[in-house]
Image (cartoon, rainbow, N blue to C red; front, side, top):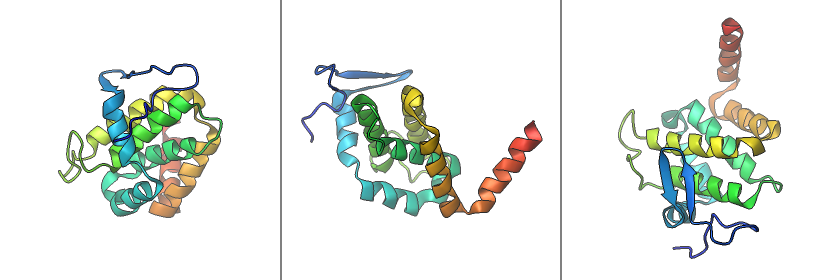
Length: 154
């Protein structure tokens, strides 16, 4: 396991706990999921399970992924993203991914919590890149249907 505290940044060398609202993870637990993260593992999980995971969760994971690539993202935010994406990739989590219907609900909760945690640092560019990749995964039709639904709500 990685001995480095992923929560520490330049201003806080002793960070050991992150608050995700109702879901609290300590640094040791998130380090375990951070160790599960890799670019190859992330893309493999998305390509293999995109339809099962669903468009919304895939898009949210992609927003985190593209935010992680941004050099201006603070270290603590990158650590949060790595932990969340590592959780998505890891076959060992609270609700096993192989359980139909509910298998990815815990993953969705972790990803949503990190999105809320770092929302001030998410740029339109990150969202645009995620949407472009969604079009590749699911086809332009998915984005067209979503746009029509948004127009109907207005």
